[in-house]
Length: 324
Image 1 (tube, rainbow, N blue to C red):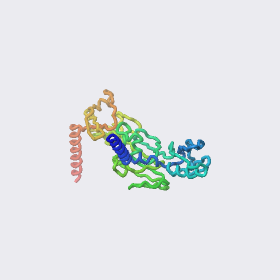
Image 2: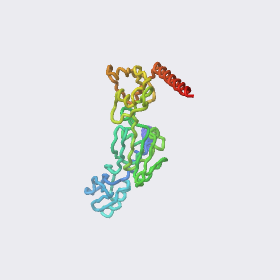
Image 3: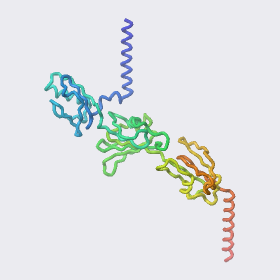
Image 4: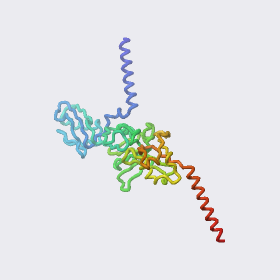
């Protein structure tokens, strides 16, 4: 008796655990409720009806043409709904038909994921999936390297599937698509509305690429940033040329190369004598995204220039005074 009781307890515990697991993973719990669509493969098994028992391809119009029963519009039905409809139709030909139907191959629910993800391309979602689900199916956003993910994710949807139900959604002028730009940190937060956006067939998900910038500051004619569009590295001289070269008060011999990492931490990478590089006496240095060129000011040159400006101003002032 004790052994039987233990078996019952274990069985009940297993069933309760399975039910709890299904509740925690609704995607798995509703997998059999996936909706049939055009071009999907539907597996049918009918006892004593070999001519029906195989995988059938749904037409582009959403129909299945089957022996005995003829045409059934399958698109839009779940596998269970289709199974029930086929069972009813077969009752005219088979007494108490035993029918099993399931989606054997999905082709009707493609979603395109592009941009800074590990595996960009087209994904068959095979049932209800959230934006976070699909992003993970694509390998997740790139965390580093030349194609590191930027701060935003854009979802674009055909209007026939309804407007995207989130704040900030926009519709194109022709009224064919709706789109919304979301923050990546919200999309990757499983509890957010953005992460739980239900994805529809033919949605396009675009993960932005982090700008790959090299900065040049200090005594250059055009301080700012240089973006690497198609290259992974660029030389110091190329960046210096883009910045218009050093000013006449610069101290190029004491130029510093710094780097800022993904978390915003700065570190000194090297010191470069730009004067020697420009004269061809030292090798140029290659820079990577996040590098910063700091061209300092020469105190001597600055003092000399200020003195010269003061002298010029005094002379001009004296000249003007002399005319009165």
